Every structure is written in C-alpha cells, then in structure tokens.
Amino acid sequence: MSEEEKICVLADDTLDTATQRFRETPGPDEPPPYTILDSVTASASRPANSSNYLPKQESAESSGSTGLPEMKLYGQRWYILLVFGLMACHQCLVWNTWGPIASSVQVAYDWSDGTVAMMANWGTIMFVLTAVPLSWMIESKGLRPTCLLVSGLIMVGAVIRCCRTLLPSPTVFLAACHICSILNGIAGVTVMASPPVISSLWFPQNERTTATSINQAFNMAGNGLAMLVGPALVKVNTPPPNGTNGTDNWQEYTTRGIQAANISSNRDIEDIKSDIDNYMLIDASIALVIFLLFCAYYPSKPPLPPTPTSTIVRTDFKNGIKKLMGDRDILLTCFAYSMSQGIMGSWMGVMVLNLRSLDISDQQVGYIGLGSVIGQIVASLFVARFTDFFRHKIKLTILLLLVVSGALFVVLTMMCLGALPSTFPLLCAAIIAATSLNFACCPLFFELSVEIAYPVAESLVAGFLTATYNLVGIVFLFLFFIPNIGSIWINYVLVGSVVVSVPAVLLIRERYNRSSVDELVQQMTT
Image 1 (tube, rainbow, N blue to C red):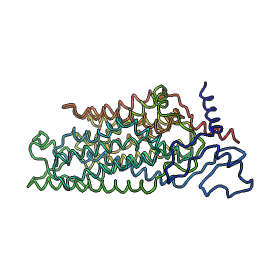
Image 2: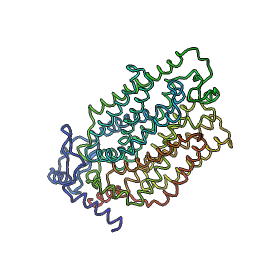
Image 3: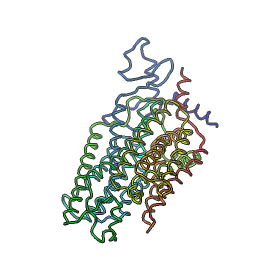
Image 4: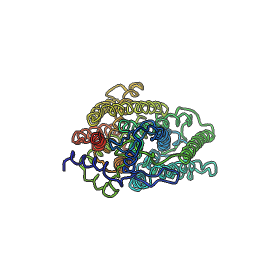
C-alpha cells in the first residue's frame, strides 16, 4: 500500500470509527471522553438556525453538512503551555547547576572535573533508563498524573540538596547532590518527550510546531539562567588551598576564573559554601511553587479536540516501538537529531571546562551561555513559526541550519586551536550564532519524526528521539573521565556531530502523514 493510500485510510478512519477516543481515561475533575460519533450525532441533531448550540469558544469547526467532529480551541492551552514550560525551565536549571559554578564548588568541596561532569551525566543516564516507562505513562495515564509525578521528583531532589542546614557534612552534601541529579534526570524524560504531545492535544495544525518550540525554548532558558544565576549567587574570591584536587599550581586555578587573593582563614571557604546553600534554597522554593501549580490545575486534555487527528487512537505501545525500530526514515531522523543536538546540549552543560584554556572566567562563560540561550530561543521560535506558515519544508530548513551552524563550529575550533583570534566578543559571536542555529533544528526534528511515524503516539516518538539524544550525551560526558584527555577534543566532536548529521538528513524521505490526514478529512467532508 502506498503512503497516499495509507493516509486516505487514516482519514476514513477518522470519520467512520465511532470508538476512537482520547488516549487516557479522564480523572474525576476532567470532562468525559468524546467520540467522533458523538460529535457527528450532535452535529446532525443541532437545530439548523441555532447559533447557541456550541459553548463559548475561541475557535470552532463543526457542521452537520460536513460531518467533521466538533472542534474547539481553548484559551487555557497557553496556560497549559506556560506551566509545563516553567517546569521544563527549572528542570534544566537544576540539571545545569554545577557546570557554571564548577570553580566555586571545586574550591569549596574539592570536587573534581569528573564529579562536576557526573552531576550533568546523571540526567542522561536516568533518561535512558526511564525513557520507556515514562513514555508509556504519558500515553496510558495522561499528562496530569505524569506531570504531577515528575514535578514532585524535581521538588524532592531540590529540597534534599538543602541538607546542609541540618547535616553540614561534605559527604552528605555530595550524596544529596547525586540523589537530586538522579531524580531530576528521571523528570527529564517527560520534560523532553511531552512537548509534541501537548501541541497535538491542545493546539491546531498551524500552531503545533510553534507550541513544541515554545516548550523546548523554556527548557533551554533554564540552561541559560543557570549560567547567569549560578555565578551571580556563588562568587569565588579565593584560590584553593595547596593540594586541592591534587595540584599545587596556582596558575591553573586562575585560568578557571578564580581571581588571585590571599586565604586568611577557613572563613573564605565557608562564605562560598554559604552562597551555594542560598542557591539551593532558592531552587527548592521554585520547585515547590511549580509543583503546587500542577496540583491546582492541569488537565490531561481539553474537552474537545483542536484537530481531527487529535481524536484518533494511536498505535499501541508495543507495536509503536516495533514500527519506530523498523522505519528507516525514523532511524535516520533519530540519528541526525541525537548527534547534532545531543552533543551540543551536553557541551552546554560543561562549556566552562572547554573554554578555560582561553582564559575565559566562569562569569564570562555565564554571559556567553545566557547569550546563547537567548539566541536559541529567538531562533527556534522564528524558525518554528516559519515552518507553521510554510508547511512541508522541514527537511530543507534543517539542512540549511545544520550546514551554517557546522561552519560556525569550525570557526570556534580554529579559535580554540589558535588559528583565529579568540577575543571575548568573537567567541561570543561564534558560540551564540552556532548554538542558536543548531538548536533551532530541535523542534523541527520532533515534528518531522511525529509526522513520519503517525499514527504512532507522539509521546513514544519523542521519547525514542530523546532517549538516543541522551545516550549520545552519556558517551560524551563519560569521555571526561579519561585521564589527561584535555579539552581540545571537544571542539572536534562538536564539528563532527554536525558533519555526520547532514548526510542522514539528506537520506530522509520527507512524509507528512499526520498533517495530510487533517487536510484530507477537511477536503472529504466539504
């Protein structure tokens, strides 16, 4: 059966199958599930001249003559997007707590580079381990219970890191930080896999990519806030004592952004620890507020669908996995996404380690990180909105973005090797431009994968993509544990991640199964 025939079959199913419902059983505080048969029946029985039959709505499509299911856009969709975005932002901030203040925590607690990297690596490890059960939970239980669970995990982890107020032991604090990173890493599955689900359940066809991009932009904003807030709250004014981390070389620590000063007492170290404690308390407070927002109001779905395909029951979990593993185009998309985005995403968390050789301080890295995040948010939103207006051009857009960002990563590598000037403004420009254009591909990869894989559930497709994304991140971050590996290799890996992604994208057969069903349903019923 050709792809066109498959799409027509799916379109027919949308109109003819009366048993198709939303994908989870509603909770006691949610509206009952609806079927397309209910919509069509209601549409047929509506008085011909009744304009009050439909509830008040932002936008609706329903007609007895067309047979389309009753559809409605709810203003609450932006609140749903905002609350989830706040959780995504804070989850990423917690994940990237230690990279921007690496020098500070190394002075205060004698952490090694490997320990700093491991705090970020827990996120990738736990994502791979929990991707399947949490993707299944999104699909079978719905958004509300899943979001309550993961926002609770983030809150518990953040609160545990405040343990120094009760047990001022470096060992206990280190263990608490590991536990927090583990719990926060588990939450990352929902944070990264749910945006396409939210856009499918709550948003119309011409807003899906934009909605996905907004959620992912919130997540990236957390990365940038960590780079700004961390160095602002946790300041280092003293060098480490002799022997810290196995070195007596004062110059090594000045290149880590620590300014020369004399240690007069242990009080200098305690000041740094106190700053870190305050940072942990702020994080915990924010996590608690976000958790309470989910508890107060966060329905799994709207009462009525925004599009016809929102009502179609997706492929069951087991068969969906089989379809993903056997689809050449999904595997190519997954490879290109995980390589181009996974390595860059992990690199953002430990960027300070890469730029130390250029005499860039932690605070300067924070400025670069903040600029990168702002650029990534702006670029991804602009590109996503562009693709919503000019549909069926996702593959071409991804290719252009990857090529340009790859060229900019080459420029960054040449700066790190000394082949080009490496002044702070030039580094800012190269890193911000490269990461912004690269990250703009992220929502496009998600939407293209969902379109190709349809009717496989969006949560499963997104979970599949982000599991491989994090698997690549695990390998990247574990390389820091190789003795005397240095940091120059990071630049080669950045360039290589884009180089290997471009051929994979070229080989993808671009298909828009989900959008085609929505379009065909409307054509068939008009």
